Image 1 (cartoon, rainbow, N blue to C red):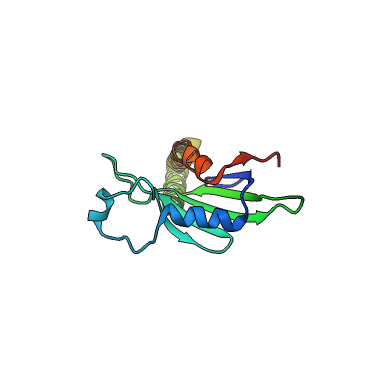
Image 2 (cartoon, rainbow, N blue to C red; image 1 turned 90 degrees about the horizontal axis):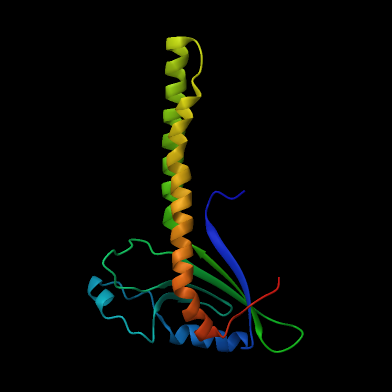
Length: 172
């Protein structure tokens, strides 16, 4: 079981890996775009910002909304040519690295509170009350909330990537 939520998908595309890299580069701003003013000048032809290598990319979707995400979910992709014919296999992972700090931090805090509560119950009553485990609800809620945020981002980004890279879901 993984505690760090992410969504991984495998696609095939009739495009060659070099063409996929070219298309991703043409729709991605470089990371040098760091000014807050640039957030309001989003070019619809470049909806992403990130880094592109020869056979992989790591991008985030740019958006101007009423609620600005401090760390939007990242999209990491790897491409490899299909040996049987033309085209490529693309593995895409949606994840949020900042969520790891929340999950670990709330997990450590909750475990500490649960242990302290159980020790206090043991000293007071001579028995352990399992109600102290209720502190573990916060980390579980953080994981569930992250999963729903990733699903929402996936539903928003997927049509853009489908059009851009001519993606078809792989049977793998």
